[in-house]
Length: 64
Image 1 (cartoon, rainbow, N blue to C red):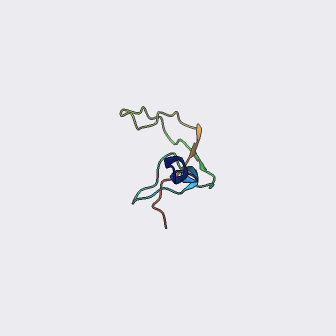
Image 2 (image 1 turned 90 degrees about the horizontal axis):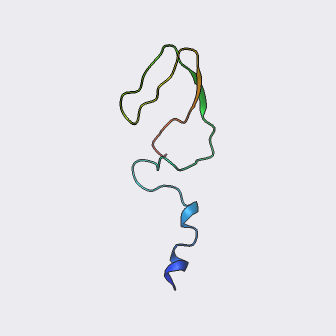
């Protein structure tokens, strides 16, 4: 078996480990949330938003 054969289907496999891959699409739709107040994100992983704006959020959850 070649190394290419061993990777066949690897892209379609679900994430492995205690936390899902943040780029893994589980097919579930995100949820719409509305900002109740202004917020300026401080860290690289924080969002900035203005009161009344809507955002699509994709909740993180542990796999079943």
